[in-house]
Image (cartoon, rainbow, N blue to C red; front, side, top):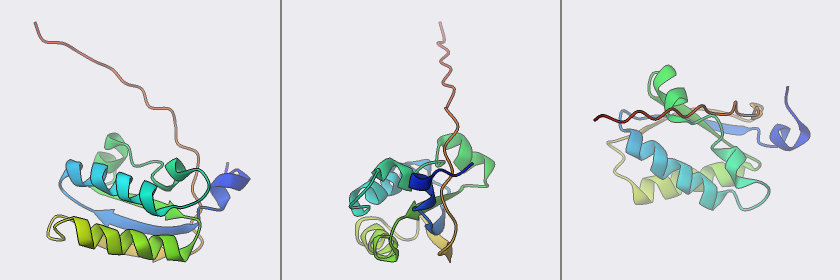
Length: 109
């Protein structure tokens, strides 16, 4: 179910990268350019498992088209664009609440 706050984050862009470190950088960039509201929603559902399960693709969502455009500009300015590729953009693709992640740690002895 989409709640009102998540529903406002409807301007999406898909990004493909084979480098998980780039996903971490893109999360930071999305956090920076989403100037209002809860910035964490912009990069919700981009967990490592989400990226792997979606064939190395993640979706970022913003409350304004301008924020999405700024995300693209900043990503191209800061990162080597040979390491990622922008995919489809949608203007009516609201965010959904992320499932809590289950973190399991194992230690080698």
